[in-house]
Image 1: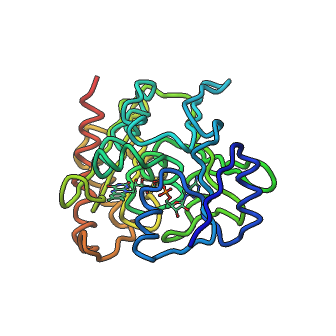
Image 2: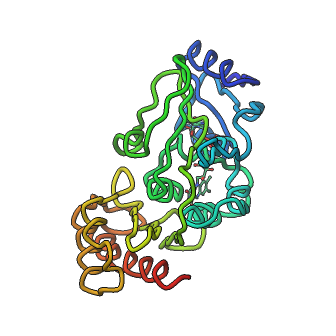
Length: 276
Ligand SMILES: Cc1cc2nc3c(=O)[nH]c(=O)nc-3n(C[C@H](O)[C@H](O)[C@H](O)COP(=O)(O)OP(=O)(O)OC[C@H]3O[C@@H](n4cnc5c(N)ncnc54)[C@H](O)[C@@H]3O)c2cc1C
C-alpha cells in the first residue's frame, strides 16, 4: 500500500521526497497508476504534485523565453496559442499523445519525468533547445535535454529531485513541424521527427530511435542554405540514420526505423521549407 502525501509548495515536495527514499512523485497519474496496477512499481509513498500552484501555467520570462509548469496537462499544451513559430511543434506533439483521456490527465512534468524514449515531447523539446527546471534539496537547477537524458529510461534526476518546469528560449520565426509514425493513432511513436526552420537552416531531432532524441549539429551546419537541394537533404537524413541507435521492439525493427528516418526527415524539411 502507498501513502499519498499532498504538498502545496515545491519545497514541501522536495522535503517529502527526501524524507521517503521509496517515494515517487505523481503528476497526472496516467502512467503511474497504470504501473502500480500492473504491480510494476510499489512506492511506499506517492507525492501528489497536483496542489502546487508554482507548477501550473505558462509564464513569459524576462528574456522573452517561456516557462511551462510541470503540472500543465497535454490538453492545455495542445491548445496553447502562445506556442507559435519554432515552438508550434510542441503543440502538435501534445495533440497526438495517446487519446483524449490520457491528454486530459497526463502532464508535461510527468511525461518528461517518465522519460520514455518514444514519448512525443522529447524530440520537440530537444529540437526547441528547451531547458528543464529541476527542483531538489539544493534548490533549482537547469539542464539541457541531452544533459538530462542519460540512457534508456535513465535521467540525471538525483534523490529528492523532480521536474518542476520546462523553459523554452525566446521564440524564433519558425515554422516547425512534428511528424509521428505510429502503428495506430494513439500508439507511441515507432519513429518521430521534430523540425524547425531557422532562417536558411533547420534544427532536427529524431525520437524513438535511441535512448534520447538524436540531434546532429554538424549535419545541421552542413545543410545550412541547402534546404531545397535534394542531395543535401538526402545526405542529412542518411547522416541521422547512421547516428541513430534504434532497437527492435513491438513497434518496429531497428532496420525499419533506420530506413524511415531519411524519409521522415526529408518530408519534415519540405514542410518547413514550403511553409510561409
Ligand atoms: C494508455 C497510454 C498511452 C500513452 N500513449 C502515449 C503516447 O502516444 N505518447 C506519449 O508521449 N506518451 C504516452 N503516454 C504517456 C502519457 O503521456 C503520460 O501522461 C505521461 O507519460 C506521464 O504523465 P503523468 O503526468 O500522468 O505522470 P505520472 O503518471 O504521474 O508519472 C509517470 C512517472 O513519472 C514520474 N513523475 C511524475 N511527475 C514527475 C515529475 N514532475 N518529475 C519527475 N518524475 C515525475 C512518476 O513517479 C512516474 O514514475 C501514454 C500513457 C498511457 C497510460
